[in-house]
Length: 146
Image 1 (cartoon, rainbow, N blue to C red):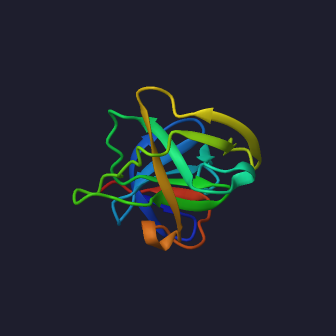
Image 2 (image 1 turned 60 degrees about the vertical axis):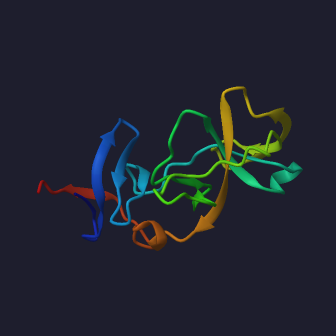
């Protein structure tokens, strides 16, 4: 169990890298955090220019996104729709984008298509509490073995 400096349980560690740690939260979401306690920024795409329209994530059509949560510019997002097993439901009608967020705080206008063998997963914003994280996360400090 990974705990932050305030003693908040963040989740069970599933993976670590030099830049981040991924935990499985109490609400069964996989969440990637930087070592300073911020949710790791991800890339997402938009059906409209300037970040308008439907926001979505692109993944291989063979992936099963279970407990899928990402952060975009500090805001947490999950799949807009999940099936009975909790796997993200793709939207095959989304075939292209007009803009994207590259994970560095900037939305860029650029058109493109969802690559062959991939599919779009619409996203919706949620609170940190929804995914089982405290509203405010301090620096991860403690790894408790259970």
